[in-house]
Length: 300
Image (tube, rainbow, N blue to C red; front, side, top):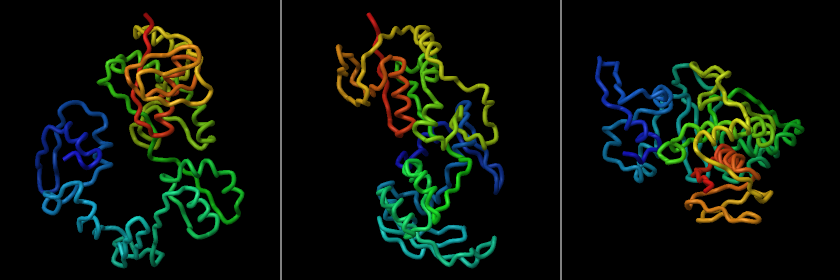
């Protein structure tokens, strides 16, 4: 069932699963699938005898989720929805007893409140995966606080944009290559992440085994991107776009002096060139986690 995010996408690429022995399974794929190992490493096996008849909508309140059983050094002591989860140590943990008696995870959706609580000593740690943007924006302030210690480490995850290859424009490889060369990657690293990031050529981290040679990375090259668009069969015009980002979901995008007709897609207008307009759309997807559809204006 596709209610569990990501599982349905992976399952459709699996042809069959064979039992080799009591401790070994063999998985046969429908075709070459380069993300298979990644998908397997980031998914967990769930007990069919417990959850086989439980729908995704029922899982949130199911006992399997509300009173989880794990194999780690901590066990759930108390869970108050939208407030906190209290863990207590498990003395029978096979790798030894944890050094703390308990851990309390507080739910703080407002990032400013979380940062303030950290500075005030109300909490001892914040999760960078959730507070990434807030940490970057407040990095210098936190760095000056003698009571706060910032630890930076190489990540195992990446931020990336996924391209819909079923879109009639995006299934043209030259369009995708133009997009790859129209993005100012270092500008994003320095301007958006304040230098607290590094570029990668794929969605695998550089720490992962099998990471591609960095020489294969696409370089930021607007003239080359324009050539790729011409190779794709597109011509572009200069657009006098607003200096501030404009988001529109209509049939037309109005910019000073003209109206650009697009097929009802989401468009982010930020730059003055159509190629850079494409870059702005992709950068928006990378930076903000947006699900962005593409539209191209073809000259007649």
